[in-house]
Length: 329
Image 1 (cartoon, rainbow, N blue to C red):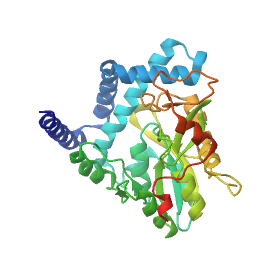
Image 2 (image 1 turned 120 degrees about the horizontal axis):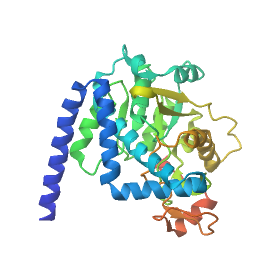
Image 3 (image 1 turned 30 degrees about the horizontal axis):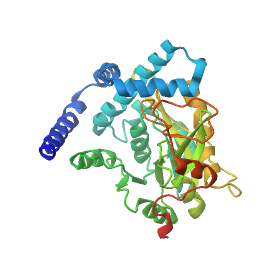
Image 4 (image 1 turned 60 degrees about the vertical axis):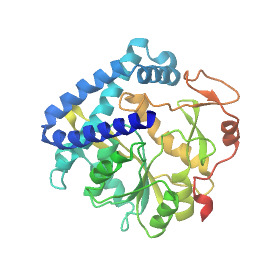
């Protein structure tokens, strides 16, 4: 019975996404913007657990810097930004090389990409901040096309829809299985890739421990390892919202002088280039995500309610793990 219910639910999800992918591109930009704000505000009310996580994250990260009213406002806006990202993603078949500049300011990225010419061979370290999906699409339309690992859905019916939209500007999205090895080969051939580097990774899956808002968290070491093995530059970048539904891509300075740095230090340098932007405008980051799942052995700060002690996490603080698949080289 449970299996039949899951099959039914998965089919309903697929039909809903397929319908949305056909209907949303018919909307005007203004209608898409307003609908996203409405749905995001509604999600912030209905998703009680997600709201609880967001508020706990904000309290742990900012402490007394923010009042409870400010935290509630930021949490609601975070839901709205995520809703905008998802609706804009479904709207993105209407993006083209010709109209891109009407919706996304890519000037910062174009200037930074010139520093990697002529091959444009680099690793882009991205974050779940505002419209990270359009950051990828915009790069493709500027002829900086890459090979990118995609996160598969539990409902595999959804994967082809997302893959088709994500690849419309020329990128290639590949599954996680042996993905790091494929990215290594791409970079050795002077190709380009992008990785979302602010997701929590289990300590036994190639993670390193970094300081994030003064709290310890476990993140991927894949971008640092690929940089060390291939020599490809690391360019941190994020996408920030503009009024009335537009976006600006912000390319950070390349991570340099890494010869004496280990994987943890490289990953920390990437995060350090990004955190000031979140502190200045926290709402576009994905606060309803569990960024701090593991507690260190010695607590110096209060962590979110969902964090748990993990012996493996304490071990990762002292040693830099290799990303999954790296040992296959």
